[in-house]
Length: 301
Image (cartoon, rainbow, N blue to C red; front, side):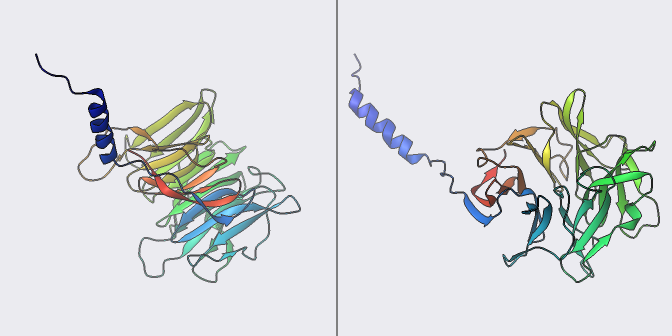
């Protein structure tokens, strides 16, 4: 009859095997920039932007430069928290302007009487109204910009409400790509992602304008509207409440790729309202205390 290994020797062997498996690193998330009560963190080109409350109940746009310095640009404040996005006004490097874009609205509204504005981060142009996006009939909201292409939403009483795109320098009018009244847009210059609410719940669509069938829908019938949209060349990232989600790679050489939605490998810090994404990682979060660096970064897949 075969002899049985003593139980205590088996336990020692198992413990040795466990010790060889690397442990998941403990989170050491660090408050980078105190900003109590801030909303709507955006980042690109080494810059960060967010909306900060003022003592008078209004809102101020705040900027953090690549050197870490934080400032409020010399522009008028806002009645509702702006939702900034950062992007470049062209694909070529020569003469490229890095802009933070946002809507200014009437009174304390975030939806009515709005026009899209930009503020140059790498020059002295300051704040400018993006006149080619403006109209007398509609209110323009939810702008985003990448590689010279804007995405934004027109809402109001006219018959052609919805999500639009426009290329910087084009003599053509903005083009409607969806009749959906989106809450938020993001663009990578070639595709547009937009989040919406409907009678069936919140959802997220990724559309490639001008390409038949170039539509993906990674989220639908959600209890909450997706927020804090991020869109790079290959992936989209968003929050549903405080839960981070990301598509697996959906474009590029080697495709076609199946549409899959991936959860993050750990939870966000308590009180997170928006995030910054780099590839398949979330590197920063805006919590109730301010801009927080995530250590380790959240990963997907």
